[in-house]
Length: 286
Ligand code: C2E
Ligand code: MG
Ligand code: MG
Ligand code: MG
Image 1 (spheres, protein in one colour):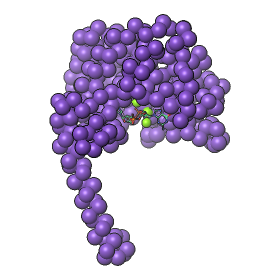
Image 2 (cartoon, protein in one colour; image 1 turned 60 degrees about the horizontal axis):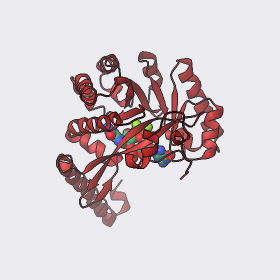
Image 3 (cartoon, protein in one colour; image 1 turned 180 degrees about the horizontal axis):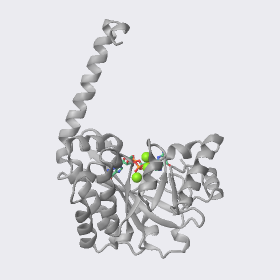
Image 4 (cartoon, protein in one colour; image 1 turned 180 degrees about the vertical axis):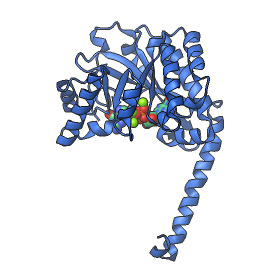
């Protein structure tokens, strides 16, 4: 196909592929030392109760400040870290950092941490997590591990054993990006997650697309039928929030209620006592 668009284009195509591969190689190499050089840091995005607007927890989201390339998104570097295996050490650091942070809060909110499918392959993941929360004195039910169905694809029986082992440690398990995978439904039948996070692609067109609304309604009904609370990701507008309230969504997370930021900028949310005005979101939108 490349040849059909002419010789010049063909060469250009090959060059840009080389360039992209070269960049990936370089990033992978740099990633190996990013942790020890202190280039990784966490942002925190608040989650709120849909009806009351009171904060329920935060999701930790990793960032990489590359010395030459600037800020790199996790969507770009996590897959590279998974390929190189660096994700194991990086994931341990993220977990440690997030637990250390949350253990200091006056307000005993939940802290949600994303787990990579590659971390899931480590047999001692459960004991490492238990050791981390103990070391920081964090109550296990304050830690919520977010996993995508990617963990269940490779070796399903093994993944289910791991989920049960984690659950036995007292931590919570959330299914992230719900609705985007191939067989989210069959996994729900096999493992009772503590929360479903509806992917933001379904929230995006909630106002304009009746199909999207139908799907979100269906997902909420499904989750509630299984007694599982639902969090809607990517809420960017007042009217999306209003619709989710109407449909009895449980929690929301998105730019409208709070962007991912350094935790210092959420000092009021993590310090105040539950129920006070200071624990509620201040709407922003995009
Ligand atoms: P995710 O876990 O589904 O995280 C939600 C993503 O949506 C975050 O992107 C967040 O910044 C973004 N987001 C939140 N609200 C809104 C909104 O209202 N509008 C829009 N357009 N976006 C919103 P981020 O931080 O770039 O992370 C992307 C993905 O990278 C995450 O998706 C997660 O899969 C992965 N990731 C992030 N941090 C970590 C981590 O610490 N460990 C691992 N293994 N993966 C991580
Ligand atoms: Mg997540
Ligand atoms: Mg998600
Ligand atoms: Mg997502």
